[in-house]
Length: 92
Image (cartoon, rainbow, N blue to C red):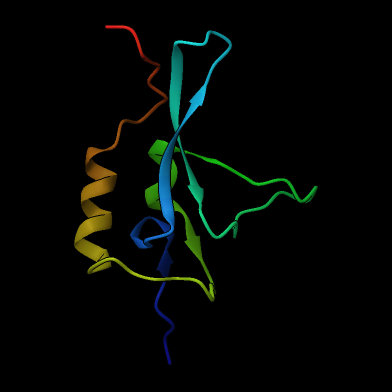
């Protein structure tokens, strides 16, 4: 039996957050798991770069709650997300 891949980006608990840089009005986008399933060895919560979220896969997750059909969504994310960090500003 082939097990389906669990794409974190297709889970309702995978959210995009702002992570502020050294300047208070500059930020980059990061992704985190609201159920805190991504942790470092130190126990600290791990954040992933926004453009890599389409590649984040788990073997097993007891909190996984899909928000739709994964494959068209993931394919589109890989195509549309920027390939590197973009720095945003709260000032216009």
